[in-house]
Amino acid sequence: MLASGILILAAVVGLTLYAVWRRHDDRRPSSNFLIVGGGLVFTPAVLAALLVWGLGAGHSMLPLSTDRDVLRIEVRGHQWWWEVVYGGGLYSANEIHIPAGRPVDILVRSDDVIHSFWVPRLGGKIDAIPGHTNRIRLKARRPGVFRGQCAEFCGAQHARMGLMVQAHEEAAFEARLALLATQAAAPEHPGQAIFEQNCAACHSLDPRRRSPEPGPNLADLPHRMTLGAATLANGRAELRQWLAEHASLKPGNRMPPHDHLDAEAIEALAAYLEGEP
Ligand code: CUA
Image (tube, rainbow, N blue to C red; front, top):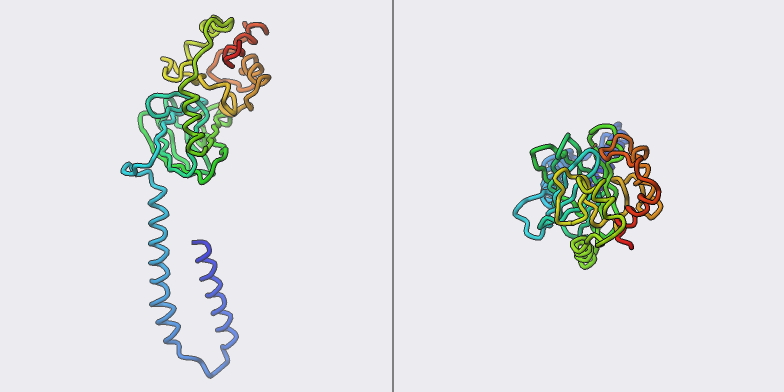
């Protein structure tokens, strides 16, 4: 569209300059050619061609429910994180894995206030509204990592309501979902009791279970790129820092402060979350 617009603008400017240059010339050419050719034939032909092209391009971006090759992923906004639900009730948070080259419909809603789901490099933005499901189509041409962000002011930590989208080759995508599906909490771990006491009311370590008062599902936490909805990069030191200082790293977030846990308890909790002995 832009290229066509530039070409036509250049032609119009050229003709204007030509007209100015020839304005005192009595040997004017017949104007019928320009009026009929440029006004009646050229314009409708170009507009019709661009319309056909634009309809096709626009159609492929529409999240039509009749498309069969489309993957559907549910995303729910919360203050201030994203809940991600893959088909068959597989839960994760703040990170969406998609196959590259395939259209993916994101079914967006909210469990509290209005948020807006936006991954600028993969598609438009759409509001996440309580009690209503909106649909937006994303498509990544090739594998890569794409940053997303809440784009509707939703409270104190609106700015730290980020998300990551990773597009994979088809096999790697299947493997990543299989990895999520097979996550299980380490049995008889020193961190287990601390988790049960302090975290389990909101966080689930089972990818197939949603907590009654849902905070981010933590099943595949060790494999995620970020912590706290893209507040920190994920890593050993960062996880411990997040557990100890999340209240100052992301002030106002809904997780109660962990001031009552000493360094040893934080370490045990972090190791439990990482699935390490
Ligand atoms: Cu959620 Cu801004």
